Length: 402
Image (cartoon, rainbow, N blue to C red; front, side, top):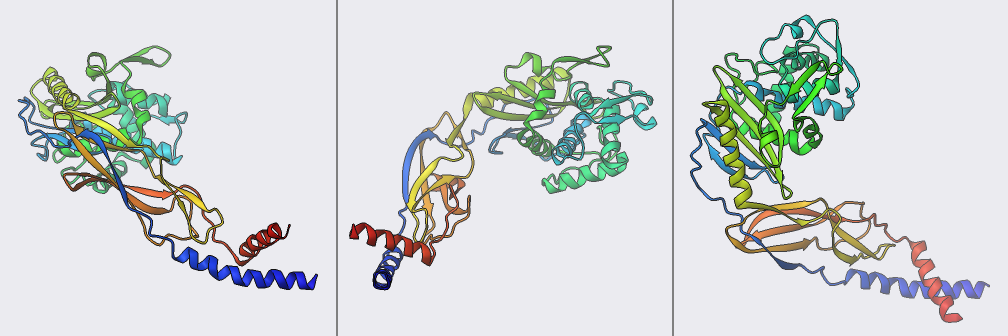
């Protein structure tokens, strides 16, 4: 038996250096590319002859801006302010701070709000779900104040949170003075900033559209009828939201979201001369986007890019995969070819964590990178220990011995 053990050990010490040398001299993992036929991403500079004072068109998935008009001009947002109020409500729901079934009390301040409202009474309580319906469908100012008080203790404290969140999002044209949008000196934003917060709400909280897409509904056991202030929901194919706003000083504003053929657009118009004109301008923007651009998913989360033999690993071959769904916005009018280049980090060796970054996928047009994404390890990779090598060599020895 001792002779057998000695023989195994001697064989092991012969093989292990060979195994290590072979691993360290593995060829560099190749860089490869393939060409896929898509449309060239170049913005058309056109005049859409909008009547609104300011406007912007944005692709929701990529954040690409497709059209602008006075996009940084500071204007009164009116009830489009509520996009930020809704964003903070949805973030509180995600965080578990509140739930849709929570009862929301009505203060004297909330019940005294003017403008768009559902005439909350101090004696009643509605659920968060009902409050969201009222805010999204009929732009209820009283419900905004009630929700602000629930989340922050007072409207003033909630407005501080609104401004802090705006700063985090890079909304540099924005100062909020209230949570509902009733005219107040210094309460301003821009079409650009509205698009930014609208994208944050729509992209990260798509469930908000379960409210903003409602054309008609009721509250209080059918006693209170709700009809959406956003006429696009009924009259524009693919409309999903998002928020209207109007006052005598702000005139007519709209943040409109719509989806067609998996492409999601955000159209913002500010200071439209009439209510109908804001909807007409939004339709012009959306029609332009859907007619000229397409959103192409070039990679899906989990797509295997390569299967690589990892040096010094227990697993051997490991799949390297795309970290997330990846779409590119392309211009239909300029069909071309985009190069997809895969760069895998050199000298990758065990151990690797699950979803650890191991490379980059780049999409190039005319030699310029237009988009990038991460490539990650599709599984955890453990490093071989001495006992793994021992077992491996032992297995080979006994197999040969038989």
